[in-house]
Amino acid sequence: MKRLITGAAVACAMGGPLALLMSAGMAPNDLTPEEMLGKFLFFDTNLSTPAGQSCAACHDPSVGFTGPNSDINATTGVYPGAIHTRFGNRKPPAAAYAGDSPLLYFDADEEIFIGGIFWDGRATGWTLGDPLAEQAQGPFLNPLEQNNPSAMYVCLKVALSDYAYLYEEVYGEPVDFIFNVDLTYERLARAIAAYERSTEVNPYTSKYDYYLAGMVDLTDEEVWGLALFEDPDKGNCAACHPSQPGPNNEPPLFTDFSYDNLGVPKNPNNPFYRMPRRWNPDGRNWIDPGLGGFLANVPEYADFAEENWGKHKVPTLRNVDLRPHPDFVKAFGHNGFFLSLEEIVHFYNTRDVESWPDPEVPQNVNTDELGDLGLTPEEEAAIVAFMKTLSDGYELPR
Image: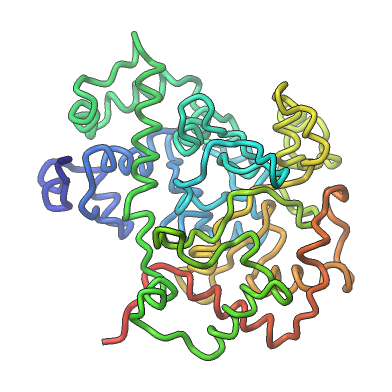
C-alpha cells in the first residue's frame, strides 16, 4: 500500500515551495509521494528559463486548472511564456479531468479520431503509453512556454530543489541529470501526470455530482437545462459531452475525447499573429489546422489530415464556469474567441442564422449538431444554468 503524505508531514519537512503552495490556497491533501512530487513540479516557478513560470501559470486551480488571468482572458486569450514577449497560439485547456483520455486512435466504426492530449492531440501517448505524461513533457522545452534549453537542464533544476528527496523516495535513486536524462525526464512527467490524476485535481465535488448521488436537488431551471443539454432534438450537447455516469457508475467526464470543427472564428487579438517568423512564418495569414495539422506529419495517418483540418479536442465541461469571483472573465473556444459561457452557447445555437464572423477553417465545420438549434433565449439560459452546476467546491446545505 502506498504511503500517503499529509499536509502536516510535508510542512515539517519543507520550506519555501510548501509555503508558496499554501499561500496560493493549495495546502496539500493526502497525496502519495509520487503525486506530491508531481504537485511540487506543477507549482515550481523555477522550472522555466528565466525562472518565474510554473505549470500553474496557465493551469490554476482557482479556475479549474486553466488560464487564471482575467485581463488576459478578456483580451488575447493566449498566455505569454516565461519570456513575456513570446506567445503560444491557443488558449490553455483545462489540466483537470484529462487523465482518462486514451491513446490517440482512429475509430474505424465512427470514422473519427479519439484520445490524445493538447487541442491538436499531439501528445498521443504512443511513446510513453500515457498521453497525460507526454503532455507534461512539452511545455518545459517549448520556447514559447517555459523555454528551458534541454531536458537535462530541467532535471538539474529538480536535483537542486528542496523537494528532490521525494524523487528519490518515489524512484529509489537520486535525480540523475547526467547519465540517464531521458528516464529522469520521463519520471518527472509521470509524476506530474499522477498529480493531475489525483483527487486534489479531480475531486468530483460539483453540485451535479451531489445531485447524481441523491444528496441535493437541482433548481427547476437547472433540471430544464439538463434536459435540453441531453435532448438530441434540442441542445444535443451530450452527443460530445456525455452527462450520465458510465457503465460501472463512473462519474461523467463531459467529453467523449473526440475532435470537432465548430466553426469558431479567428480571434483577431491572438498575439501569435505578431510573433516573429521564426515561430510564425505565416504572420496574420496563419490558420490553426488543429488535429489535421498534426496528422499531416504522421505518415500512418497523413491521408486523414485534410478531413480533420481545423478540428480541435472536445474539452471537458467540468469547471467550465469555475471562477474566483463573478466579474472574472473566462475565455472559451480553442483560441479564446468567446468571453462568456452565455456567448458560446448563443454561438452554438445561432451560428448559421445570425451574423457571426466567418469560421477560421471553413472546411469540416460541424453543421449536423449545431449552428441552428432553434433554442429560445430562455432555453439558452437554462443550459448555461445547468453547466454552472459543474463547478467543483459546491457546499452542501447544512
